[in-house]
Image (cartoon, rainbow, N blue to C red; front, side, top):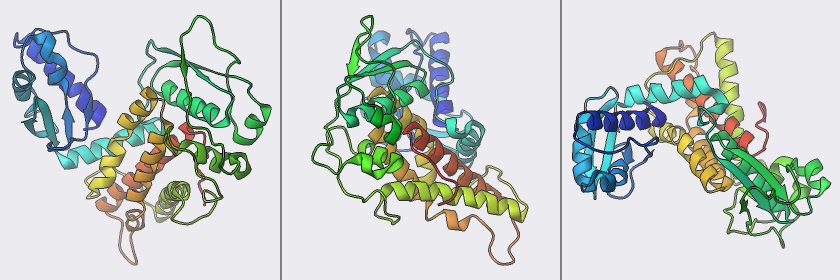
Length: 347
């Protein structure tokens, strides 16, 4: 079960409780599920009971008690535990969950985590005459569009050189008077080495990877091909994942989602839709950049284990690991594309 499917399952539980007369609330359009916080347990937690408590006229814990029976026993869910004021902590069938997450990624490809359809949001992003602000605004626009929003970006004093070197574009100069602009003002890169001298990919990463309140670091650290460079690790993990798929095809076997033991890697991949939504809502492409590093760091020790060794014949376990490797490649490629950075097949 993927996080998106789990969210739908939670909403279905609310709807069943309303239909049974146990809750008197309007069924929300979205149920947020995320990894459990401190004091939580299981694979995911949701605060839907806290969200519904006031309109239901009941305590959050009581709402959670009402919803729990509608979740326990659902296909793919093995247990639901109540913690804190009313958090529902959900444990999933790991084998089914792994196959579901990987299968969903392979089905969606590099658009995994995108909204299924456009929503009604219209967002106008506006930034000052500053290269970092323009790059962050443009990447934020990509993220918002991936989540279904209609977005325009405007900048003061936009320079053509920024397009030619870092590939940034804006829709207009000035702010559309009919729209309330959202100002994007990260800490400028003043005092750092000129990111335009790093080229498109490294320059964009240097501006997007730090949080908006942090000043980008200077130097050519994003150009070196070694483990200390997070951009290199992300792109190298992507290239290794793509190479694994090519080598498997040469050996005559292909991916088939199934049980795998790489829990941390699966959790990082499953968290990708939540990260995209949060990065879009907060106009924080740095959240996506750091998430891609986490995926790459979890994937790099795993990728050498995918292919058979010596005289070993490909098995169902190899096909399941290959499916996981292909999922890694899709998530990294899609994430880099949203940041406006190339994901090379060979590195």
